[in-house]
Length: 391
Image (cartoon, rainbow, N blue to C red; front, top):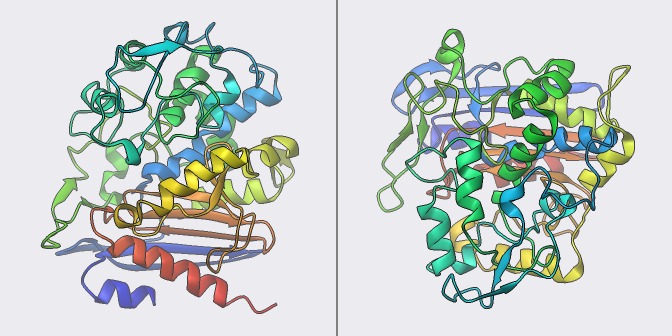
């Protein structure tokens, strides 16, 4: 099935990993460029896009375990830009038509993506969504995000879209987590992640850019033309967006990594926070991350955003629930089990683990979701993985 997608000419190459129990199977198929180039390899480094979210959240969980953060503490001591929030009276209203926030934003609001601002695909074209894009608060624009203090300053100029804790919203919370961790620890987000997560798990190829001595392992990233399917280059390896350290280390979509690095991380989660004989996170921190944290009302809003945007998402995002930094499947909508956790990325990446089946699956391509090709491959990868389980 994987080879068929590559042979179609729509997916230049991929690396896929399935792990279950002590067994791991990896396939590397195709090439690094759509017009040929070096073959994909097991150690090819990919731009993880939004599959960064389930990994970068681990930094906050370390701080919760060590009582450097508490779930219901206000974030104002570390993020004073978010003090005294105003909230829009209506989502499509002018930016100055606001009411006072009912309460301060808490750590829990940030970790559950309910602090009041985010990417809302059902609100495109409203003044607030226009302002989010104009301020460079998301990584989807041609201009890179500014350094964290300036990013926070811009964020602080906007009203909230919803009251703190009221509604699940995508993306901005995940980047905010990185700023929060950096300010609490006095270290850069990447330094803290490297010392407390990456190095301890042997994730030697994971970070926020690709060093020069590894850049030959980074494929070209394509955003195919939605009308013609032509392979438009969105990012080259040498001289591209990930060839230098970024001004903003984005927990929402900035990581690069490999299948084996991500497998080490998701196996640690399946093992209740253990990596071999070493504890990385407490078992209860892992349970918090990987079980649904949304109220029925919040879950209904997230589900509506997924099912009402199938024409945009090509069917991704329909899991129901959300934990900390990742989706958690709350109903059986396809072959995957309830309780499966992980997420997908706009660069054609998919990373999940399934506690019931003790299964990890990682599929990495570099074909962006401007067309449905990578998503159809992801769906087929999961269908064939699950239908192969016979015990």
